[in-house]
Length: 258
Image 1 (cartoon, rainbow, N blue to C red):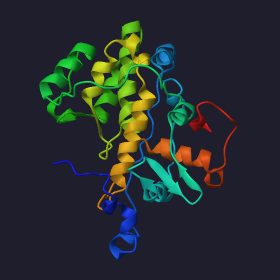
Image 2 (image 1 turned 90 degrees about the vertical axis):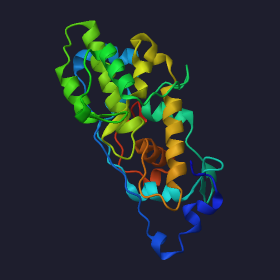
Image 3 (image 1 turned 45 degrees about the vertical axis):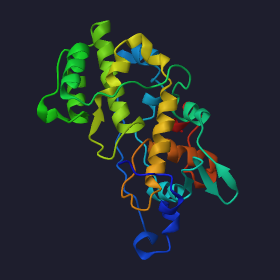
């Protein structure tokens, strides 16, 4: 049975006066964003993920993340701060990550079978991960990095396959990462099948929804780890609360590059 994540009595703020929870520090895994070969820049721009691919490594602030989670209200999807309520919007996602926020919804049937995984990888890449290279429906990021290095970039099809793998790694390390930090669900592959259609999805909306769900789950008193696009959360806080932000570089787009 799926637990209700919006029950007020389960919120961490109701437990902060109790010793086991007063010093709660949620664990989060920070992964470096994967780089890409300059020869695929045109294809990366066509996919709509060029800007977020420029961000590189980000050092997150765990204390800030925990403080924001304690002020998150699942009922309204807003942060309750002393000066009022505020939240992360689609405009924030577009400006911070440079992701498209218009277009088709990122949705569809989720197949978790091994046969489905193997068929999709064989169709798009001509190879399949072995039993040691995936955990159930989650494909290991290490295997994807190896496959990415082996891609031949002398043809348009090879460059497109390279970008698809790069996007899967981006999903697994930044946009749709889970608590393991080691795998990415193959359910995103069908959305990448037609390369010309990738840009037509509202990836920014899906990223924001994933962050909202992660914050709702993390606001429970019995949560031990937090996942999701935490870079978006931190950079949003630094932009909206600049007195907390580290020293910034010159203005740039997306804002995360600052």
